[in-house]
Image 1 (tube, helix red, strand yellow):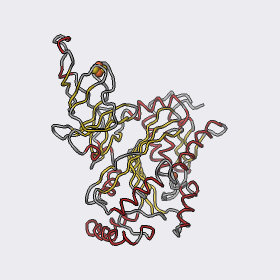
Image 2 (cartoon, rainbow, N blue to C red; image 1 turned 60 degrees about the horizontal axis):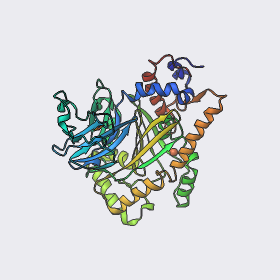
Image 3 (tube, rainbow, N blue to C red; image 1 turned 45 degrees about the vertical axis):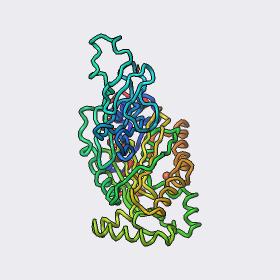
Image 4 (tube, rainbow, N blue to C red; image 1 turned 45 degrees about the horizontal axis):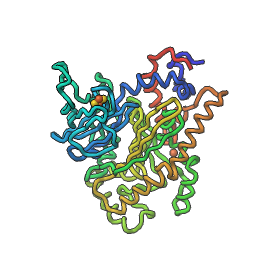
Length: 421
Ligand code: FES
Ligand SMILES: [Fe+2]
């Protein structure tokens, strides 16, 4: 039995040992502790500015189990994030996924609020005495909302550091992705929504796990081979800790990406444009950075639960735990605003057929994660081993990325010392 969160992780670089106790994935007490100690203090991804491009545009989101409204003011065009709960008696005020409005009206007693959150309508107002202070009864903004180059985050901790500091070394990788497009980026309408019966931290690990790519995604590898693409070398590159729990694996892989590196499976009709894009990146950023942008894949973790995959397409994915062994996953597709239709088609195809919940990769990953969670129930083994690459310069197929996550997780969860497994 483990009695302290600090004992959930064995981190011994000298001997190349890193282990995580499986109760970190199975204990309901640890799950409860994470809500307060992790999710109520970090910056969490809310959405992309392009999702609410016009004044009055809104989407509703659930972040760390809290219903929120992400809206662009119909008056000023400013973006805002509000708690989606009526200051009257609690009902969720916004009950549709997205739209454009000047006013949100609560369905329960019909109080209404403008897109700046102000209470602007109370039926039978005279029923209240002067104590009803309209200016204090608006929608409540979240404690913090900040944006980094179009990516909007919220925090429920009013003492949180600024987002730009929180992002630490992950900023450079976001820049690298965002700079790939001169026309800016937009989230393509629609999203993938699915759930996994596994602890949320297993998807963190899986999203930055190069070691599993070839064996787990065997079907995809065979598919690539059948198209004449050589998969023998697997992936190669490196894994990095980026500070504050963020991490990345950056690598070259047998599959292609429709950003400035032409591959024969893209077809001749795309060749000229993709080569032109590459020349432009070289002009703008120099040969070395252009090569990283165009040739390298990136799986970026922004602690604790945002993944930006710059691979066959650019996926923005969050996952929210609802129980120790269950999470809800949302995946969005980010694309350059201006690109040739063939490149857009390639991206959409990859987003669906590789990364989608029914695609060539995601079902494999879900199967692997649920199988781990099931394996934990068997007992008999207490620890997961996450030591790969600990005694060398970490490669993309090593586990340094995961250790970065776990070290930060331990810092946050360790004040909760009396966690009983
Ligand atoms: S709960 Fe919203 S108006 Fe009453
Ligand atoms: Fe995978």
